[in-house]
Length: 475
Ligand code: ADP
Image (cartoon, rainbow, N blue to C red):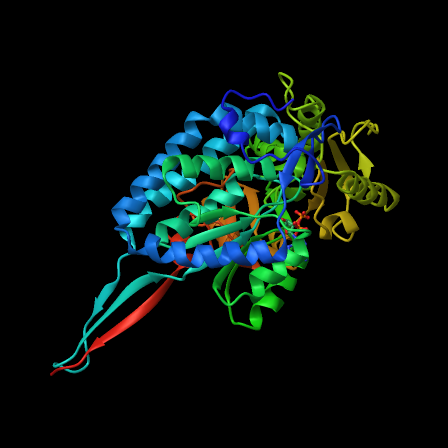
């Protein structure tokens, strides 16, 4: 099943479970191949090599690093079809979405290839005439990352590209469920000329072991994590001992709000895109819908009609829009939350049928109240609970009533309300009349327990740079 045009992308594979871990296709349960794992000592050696490589890498001209990153970007784009196929095979998302992720993932490499040349310092007017003050920016050193399975390429490139652009070396532990894309995209970096000690992919016996090495090794200066708030908290606690820099991109509980002055057709399209992308498995997916009571029935009917048209199946098949969820545990969590909501009084707008394997039928739930468990917990699946609201004040209170603060969305055509709501939402990102907000040119990240730091935009590279202040005396 792992037949792709460029077999060099798979040169990392090992022959059996004795040498590595199995990677499985969630659509059909078939083992795709085995990827290598490393002992604790081997991972420590990788860190030592990364430290040596980093010094050479940082000493290169920014323009030269930029050129190598540009070359990596071009190779990712040239191998787009193969990478997308690998992604659908190991992660399950429909092929068209996987192609979209390869392009999106590559866009960070292109963007930070450009930003590599712009890590400017500044001069500061001194308070005494005989002094001269300035700042320079320098790479933090060896940076490491732990990434999730829902975006097997983009979650790596949006950390690796700014790290490399800044002059750091970079080691990533990808999710055990989706390592094929991680190794394949690193292989393309090597083919582009990026040294093997500057970019490394490692897997250990288990994730907590690698997490402990990353957070305790003295040569690691920075950890960037994308995943659950629960694991992010553990990694921050462990990083605290050595005061390591961290960036955390954690869970979300995005509200999607439709006001009575919204364009309802546009809101339905935005809701579909925001909720059902990647079968609902993204941290910025709409988790709960608040719709003004005067348009509630109209919105729910139209939204459900569109949801009933969604084609669920194996992501490699033509026309499939919703693939499998990632694991049996994920499926059970989604089902349990949905069944609990129904017990608590929610009603599926159309009948909700169980599906075989790891597939979950998309469903819109009406008669949902803000107090139900499904509203406060991350669903991470194709289930859309819709709550009615009456006043803007009540709405804001409900929308902000969460420990999370990653993405939020609202639809309104009233400019006064747009400003008021955009400012009142306690979130790192707000989509206004828009359901898809992520791009390499804007800062992505959360507030509250959704995280610390920003990825992408001109801010993304700062996560991998230290500011040094230079004070020149008068003599
Ligand atoms: P998800 O629910 O999306 O799988 P997790 O936070 O569990 O989110 O996983 C995200 C990443 O964190 C994965 O690469 C996973 O292997 C890793 N991970 C999980 N638990 C730990 C841990 N205790 N220490 C370090 N990494 C972990």
